[in-house]
Structure formats: C-alpha cells, structure tokens
Length: 481
Image (cartoon, rainbow, N blue to C red; front, side, top):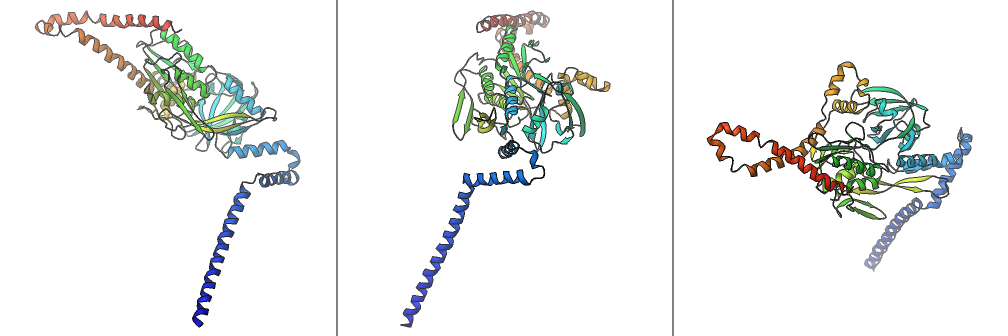
C-alpha cells in the first residue's frame, strides 16, 4: 500500500515536472515568436517611426525649423545608408545629378570619390577639370569641405557638397598619404564635360608607335565611350596597328552596358562577358561579336583605382584568355546598382544594390578585385611623376629641381605592356628568316668575309615584309568601317 502511494507520488511529480518544462519551453517559443513577429510587423514599426517623427517636431529645440520632408528624407538616407556604401536615397536634385553623370556633363569640381578605409578618397580626378588642373591626385583623402570635417560624411552628402552651379567656389582640405601633409585647395566649379577616350598625349589623335603598337586610355565609362573607342581603334587600324595597350588605370567605372560593348570589341561571337546574380534574377551577358577583333594582341593596364566597369572589362578579357593584364590588383567594386524612380515623389529615386558581378569563370569581383597576370607596382613617387607627366601644365606644379625627373620618367607598367606585345612580334620575325637560311648556313662557314655581306643584304627584306603586311591589313580593316 505504502509502495503504491510512493509510486503514485513519483509519477505525479514526473508529470508535473514535464508540464512545467513544457510551459517553460512554450513560453520561450512564444516570446521568441512574439519578438520575431514584432520585428517584422510593418504596422508596429511604422507607428514607432511616426511617434519619433512627431516627438522630434514637438520637443526638439529647433524642431520648428524642420519640415516633415527634411525628417523623412534624413530617415531614408540613414536607412538606406546602413545597407552598403553604394545604395542611397536620391532626392530630385541628387537624381538629376546622377542623370547628368550618365550624360557626361554636370556642374562640379571633377573628382571620382569613394569611401575607402573609412575616408572619403579620390579614386581619380577627371581630366580637364578644376580638380585635375589644381593637382588633386588619386589617393588623396578629402578631410574637410568648407571647413567642416568630412571624416564620417556619406557619399551622397559629399557629392551634394562638391557639386554646384558652374562658377561657384568650394574649399577643400586634402590629406596626401605620399607626403603625409594637408593641402588646402579652393576650386571653382565648372561644367564638367570630359572625353572618356584619349591617346597617350591626352588628345584624340591616336597614332601607333615605331612598333605599330596603339595606345588607348579610357578615363571612365560614359554613354559615348564604346562609340568613341571604336573611332579610336579604326584610326589606329588605318595606321597598321599590330597590338593594343588598353589603359584602365584610375578608371572608376560607369555604365554596365558600356563595359559590355567595350568588351565585345575584342571577342568572338558568343564568348561570355559578365554574369550578374541577385535575389530576383540572374543574368549572363555574352558577346554579340559586333566589330570584334578576336586576333588583335591586347594588353590591359590596371591599378588599385580601377573599379567597377573597368574590372568587368579586365576580368572578361582575362578569363577569356583574350588579353594579358598588367599592373596591380584592382579596387574590388563589383556590385550592381539599379536606379529605381519612386512614383509620385517628383523625381526622387533609389539607387539600390541589387546584384553582384561575376567574371566568365564565376569569380566574384566585389571585395576581391582582378589580379593581373604580371604584377608591376608603382611607388607613390612614381604615381605622382606619372600624374604630372599626364597633366597639362604638370611641369608648372613642381619645383625646378624636380622637372627633369618628371620629363625623364618612364612608366614601368606601360613599358611592360609594350614589352609583351613587341616580344611576340619579335619571335614571329625571327621565325621567318630561320626558314630561309638553312641552305645559306653551310656556305658562309668556308668564306667568313662573305658572311657579312649576305647577312646585310637580306636584312632589308624582312624589314620590307612587315610594311607589305601592314598594307595588306589596311584593306581588310577598311571593309568593316
């Protein structure tokens, strides 16, 4: 009897324990689900937003000076700014600036900027602009704008402060890592309209060198870049171009479609260019083969300031084994931003990161960049000398004792590119005489004096052959034109 009662108490205790455990688990699950539902409840969170909005309007010391539009736009900038450095809410003025960028004209100082290591950093000054002419350089950090600290400024805020009516002025303080010094500059804003395709002399004449090597530099990817590049390539082909150096150094990117059209110029039909992958849809872009030059030897120059569309072109030509890449690993900005107009908001829009770029071999670009085949680094001093060589009036920016260094500076990355292209041509030139000389080699051994004479006479013949070949290539090159 006693044993039965004891057993009953044990059973009741166990059941009670299980019930309490279930209640505890249930309470925990309920609290977690309740918290999750609260976190994802749009109505509850919108109520919170409205309550805070009204509290600011009524209780903030200067709340009477704030409009609802000021507060809502500020909230949207903060909300979208927390996503990544490239997404942003764009009020009508900012949206208009973006559209001007695509068209290649706007009022400003002429710098491409990005947030790098927490600093507002100049990726590249746009050529023929106030910033470029004042000596602003890639890598310079903008630490103050109009005397105000720019350390934690957002990209949209920085752009709005640097843009403005042509003729107006803006004062900036730059920190230059190479010298560890601050530089004060006052720039007069201008209508920025820059050619994106230039030759080695910052012009648009496009001539080949003594080795028949052409050189084209893309400063960015705007609406007319692919068309201007085609024009440049045709000029070089008329001169008998045998190889091309495509310089993408300090090119911060631009329009995706232009990067695709530039890549197509060197690919056969059907070759992959780029893949975009996001939440909603994945897209693979292939070459249509229009105006393709699949046999033209190409070397692409890049550095750590080559970004976005530049990396798409470099990655595409590298993965297709279509070009040799020379320089330094690129910036690593490989995300896709779409411009999404907001209905009923009088020209406002979102620029939202919706996908990431992948090279043809499915290598992600974002955060990694493109590694060159041949790594050739420039020191800070060499970068400055190159900048001064390229800058119109660059010699006037330096003291007399440095001018000789600027004038005599040889670009190591460009030299490597030319070496790769001319090296291939030299090998081909050497292969041709070897086929003609087998029968001549035994004869010169008996008469050493006569060796020099026959060797001198055939030399002009191989030199004549490339000239004839160049003329033959001018014909076919004229046809696609």
